[in-house]
Image 1 (cartoon, rainbow, N blue to C red):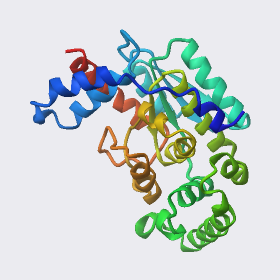
Image 2: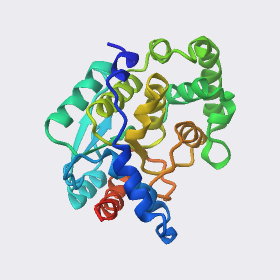
Image 3: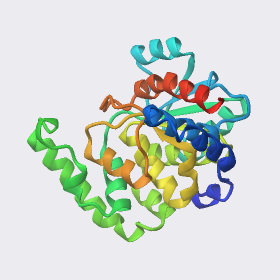
Length: 271
């Protein structure tokens, strides 16, 4: 099972529905980003779906109390998952969500580590220093230097695989990025819209995007945090975040807070 193999099953969203909504809302510039979201929702939304059946998957850890409380407030289910299963676990999560009738899937992965920075640096051809937080975000200079060296050395090793996402994923040896990439790609193949929460989720999605670019049409980013690699990944994916909170948690909170906005977009897309 490979990303390239999963990508062959990804179809385009409903372009006719998206076009109809865009034409209807083109005369309402005051709606701003909400109009764009309504257009996206029209293409990816299952018939009759109101995004009431929402599920948050927190990769690598259990959800915090704040996230659980917020999920209850917006009516979303939460799954915390380990990363040991890697690729196969991501596919199983996507299939399980689709089989349960999930209408929108939020994917979050807290805890920034070198794997995400390396993946983004390699796939976008960005120098290591440009994907790392600096200034006030780098409060421990020695730790920052060690992190920079790790990213630099790994980027050099991985660069020969920059146009082969499956080989790059194998070289990275990151079960959580493998899980995220497989999850968002399989979800797209199952016609389940995805909300990406945080820089790590976007790094995993970037791997999937390189294998199957059309899958990006099924994804939307919840927010953009302060990590430079988050902005770089979103730019490569052509994504504009739903919210403008600037959160860098990546724990699912931003994705959950984006749900009411998406539901407002459904009301617009439904006329």
